Length: 124
Image (cartoon, rainbow, N blue to C red; front, side, top):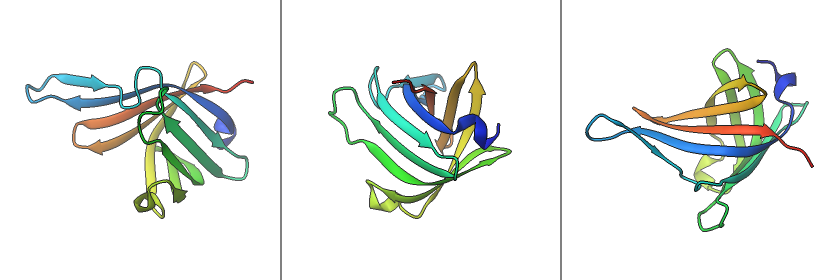
C-alpha cells in the first residue's frame, strides 16, 4: 500500500471489537454501535484527521489529528492533538490493508483484543 492509495476522505462503514472470551471462544462487540459514524482524512502532505462516534451520539467520540506514515506493517499515526489529552503525543500503530476498495484498519489493544475498522471512500 502506498500513501497515494489512501489519500482522501473515508467514511466509517463498520467498527468491531474482537476478544477472546473466558471459555476461549471469540467474542465480537460493536463499540460504536451497529451503525457507527466517522470520517478519516489522509492528506497528500502526510496529515491524518479522524473522528469516530455512535449513530446516536450517546458515547464519547474518538477524535484525533496528526501525521501519518505508510510502513511495511501498515500505518503509523503520530497523534499531535486529540479529544483525550493522554492520546496527544502518542504513536498509534495500525494494521492496514486495502480490500476491494475498502480500507481496513486494525489496532491491537491487548493480548487477544483487537479493534477492526472498515472505511469506504467518502462521496458527497
